[in-house]
Image (cartoon, rainbow, N blue to C red; front, side):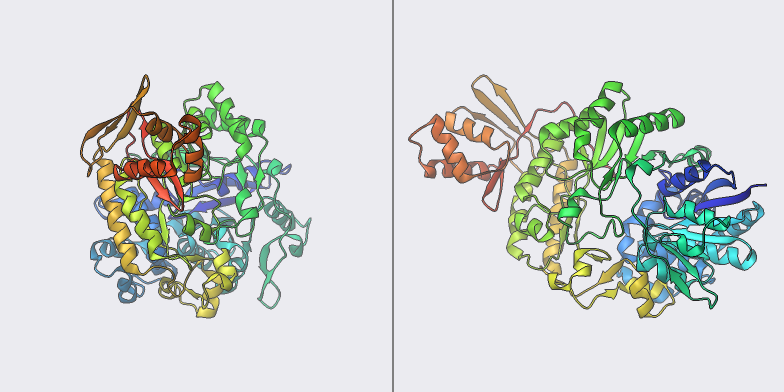
Amino acid sequence: MAEKLIFVVMPWHSVHYPSLAAGILTNLLNDRPRPDYETETVYANISWAEFLAAKTDGRLGAQSFNLLGEDLFFKGTGEWIFSSALYQCKEWRVEEYRSFFGDDLHNFDIALTAHRLAYAFVDQLADEIIASGATMIGFTSVFQQNTACLALARLLKERAPEIVTLMGGANCDGVQGEAVHRNFHFLDYVFSGESDYAFPAFLDMLAGLKTVDQVPGLCWRDDDGKTVANPHGKLPQASDFRIPHHDDYFERALNSSQGHYIEPNIVAESARGCWWGQKHHCTFCGLNGMGMAFRSKDPDAFIAELEYLLRRHQTLDVIVTDNIIDMKYITTVLPTIRRHGWDLRLHYEIKANLHREQLKALQDAGVWHIQPGIESLSTHILGLMDKGTTGARNVQLLRDCEELNLTTTWNLLCGFPGETEENYRNMEAQMPALVHLQPPSGAARLAVERFSPYFNNPSLGFSDLRPAACYRVIYDLPETELMDLVYVFEVQKAGIDDTVICEMQAAIDRWRDAYDGGSTLKRWHEGDQILIEDRRIGWPHRDHLIEDPLSICLLELLDRPVQLSALVAEARKLIPDIEEAAVHEQLAAFRSDGLLYEDDGLYVGLVTAHIPFRLRLAA
């Protein structure tokens, strides 16, 4: 008789899509020649949404996940909510944690309500899982899932010690996996790093075909009860990535009492790692801690996988989890999707320097939402990040995305060692001209993340790292253990002061209001003339009729970022005796009218081609 293995997806995993990790591991089990295990994935995140709604008369529920699990991430709110369940008390360090909210008592009260309900939820969930007859429980922990996973694992071990408890995911990468195993003895095994090869080896170990020390990246206990961390093995290759099994998610989501808030998406991966990070690791980025090497699926294999998932789940909304798109997919995968005519709504993460034709290929394939990692509109600050792009290039991307109706999510990061207030004042001064383009979600000081160059290399400007203060309230652990356990660290502030960040946020708020108010800046070509219709909020509503050859020439050249010297050289091909001063004067006039963006000697035009309808930002 097969044993029962349950993968548990705890809060705060989004209710809108399945767990890729659980789906892949399920199919790893299904593909084994011996059917050793009956598998199931329990979407406890959806159960938590239902529980919250039932206990609060609908005030909280699935609609609260973005606030508690994402928006308040750097306060550790999602983790603190389940600390009450982890430490088995109704309220855990409430007054200490309240201090992180300052005057924002409304959001704190929401968090406190959830905090007081967490233990009862985990208590109920533990009883349900034990009653299912499960013999092994696997937890996947990413971002703010740690305390929820640990709370459930603790209760399961106390009530049914024979159940084997496993944990893996990004929160277990490297020394984090050792720390979580070392400090929480109710976890039997912890997997550090990608588990595509390690998990089958672990099952072979349980079957007596391997020894425990032969399972790569596994944390286990020796006869003295001390944690032993096995060396990591080779990274899984793309040809070995399994198609995820999402059946449990779609059945659960479609039958949930919170279904009116849930918008199910398929989750797929076409690559892991980051080809840019292999060459130039962005200084603030802590992703891909154990697997930066870029590995991409064969284009035909990914198309076949995508078709399988679409047909099986009858859903056209697809989130591709890649940190960065494989550039060869733009000429292979994307045109194939277009030819199939699947009418998808795809999400992809891209590099910000894609040109318009590449963005058009994304749009033609059904990509409607991109995350390009813009981070700044200042070339100097982007250089400090090692982003490999410029402020003007990022503005061009925003302009091209507006033309192509590609929804673009980005934020403005601040606080880099070596940045200046002048960098921000230049951006702020030109933001009113950008109000017809999609604004950032906000301005925020960067946090130092584990595995980032800022974490690994103090010479870049940050030293004396300490675990973020919220973790000292969430966990009942000494700081030496927190140093190995946590992902986000506090450091001395660098770069601009908080006053400038607040002013940038105010400018972004004005930008967002003007964008949402319907600002447009469009152009039409009419014979030898260009008509520019300016309907941006904050600017006089006017029409510019551009007739003189020099102005038309410059506007066309400003389609991409260009230096003054190049503009002069091109203008002289049209008007041989034109002076540089005349070109500079015309550029100044364009800037005065808000028709171009200028940064670090590069100019780029802001006028979009006429578009048939406007994008709408999500609330």
